[in-house]
Image (cartoon, rainbow, N blue to C red):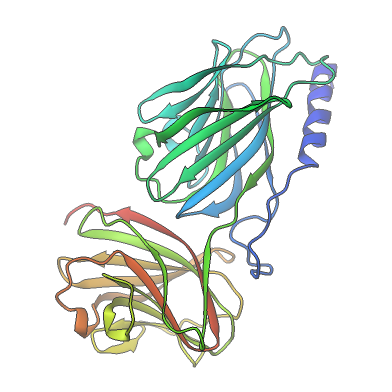
Length: 358
């Protein structure tokens, strides 16, 4: 192995050893996404992808150290970005930070790279000891699809180089972040992005004693859309519902589309005036499930399914079920409510994606 490669790998290991990504409290082994932090190496003309802790709603902070290398200390062209799944093109990325060939750090804002403040960087030579690191902090609103970026060189002051920038145009409505992708486009050099940390999601827990809870609200951008909610039943035979309503619910009749963890240990959904399911779907205590609502406001119907991020499966609960009878004519939703009558349950994160008109 050549000396330069060995030096880089040793630096990579030392940086990775300090990485941390705090798991979500109370999720035991079923934390949302991987429990460890991320460390990704950018090499010439090669995409590198790594799963990170999943985020779907609210405001999340992603932070990491960046260390650029180039044999002669020249600028490189390296990007680090975040996507739903593994990326193999720049258009797969939503929020993006770039170390550019002009020797500056810039940020993607919709259809272009720019920055509010000119932030220079220097590439490390492989012999530099100690090397220079750049600490990057990204504050991302998954609901608004916008983000701000802060950078600190070494132990210097943190500088806000981008404020309220839009996700890359092709990912303007990106509903989930669960992957970090890096790539180097310059002819030589390397860069790594280590000690990556993703803030845990905001969760809402309910028990039989806590009454009605509003987990979150979400924007409706069309009459047909998909809503995904992570949920953890904290018992084997609980009675808990998660549903969509137009306002913060205070009674069952306020909900239009509903998925339920029932006392028989099964998951079912509301269809007009009754609960049932296409096929029996058992659930396990303290396990993470993603509840999926495929909403059609014009028809007053929804389809419901359940995905298991740990087991990677999807099961259909209901197909074109009618909104709950009391909400048959509702034309707007936008709120997620939950109620537990036995046991306890927790919901975390929300992803919303519009569907094309029929």
